[in-house]
Image (cartoon, rainbow, N blue to C red; front, side):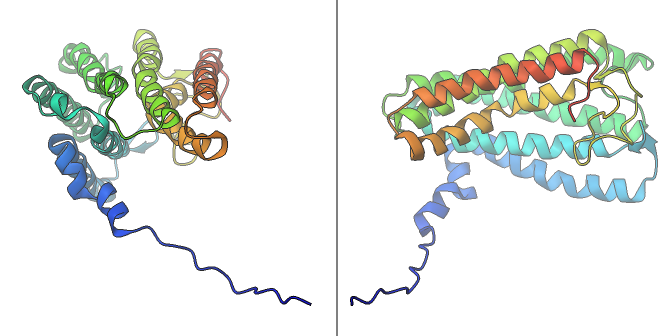
Length: 283
């Protein structure tokens, strides 16, 4: 009778070249401004967290510093994601003067957004939908423009990666990157634009975050437009991640599952948007 060897096969750890490809030095090489600003956003969370620990003031039932902290984290992830994807942008475009100027404009918009939200927290007033303080009322349209500019970086990368025939990407992965980045801007504009037009992210229920969904703070007693906005801005993460799984399951040259999921994702975002507009909580 033949004996069977049950000795477990050790799992192979990622090589050093893999870690270098996702490490800070590679990000800084491919996109110096986005990478460094993203790291700075992470560092900015430290004093913001300390401020929240020392300052017991509340706004809408939660710490006045909670919103700046969330935005710093979200923008750090956003910038480092753009820095990671920059490796698939043609070098000629990535290093061009026009692209460097565009990235500076995006960086200024992001810094302006954080300064604006941080200033509102310091003053204990609303940054968004503020109809009481004249300065914030005047500044709000400018901040809306800056938010559009900073989000437009996803559309620029989507177009650049789509046109890059030399990118080391299999069709399924390339489709996931392009679709995820391309859908982020329009989906975000729909949700953010509607919120701006109605002057609130709450639809029915109490205008208070104290009893909101854990971690996210989304309303549980009415609709919350932030849900659709969240999933819209993360199309750039979700669709490429699904493309990576799809490439393993259905083949790296099969784009159809990725395209099908992208369509489903659009309907999902629109679904949670309608859910909020009709006054129904996400969960």
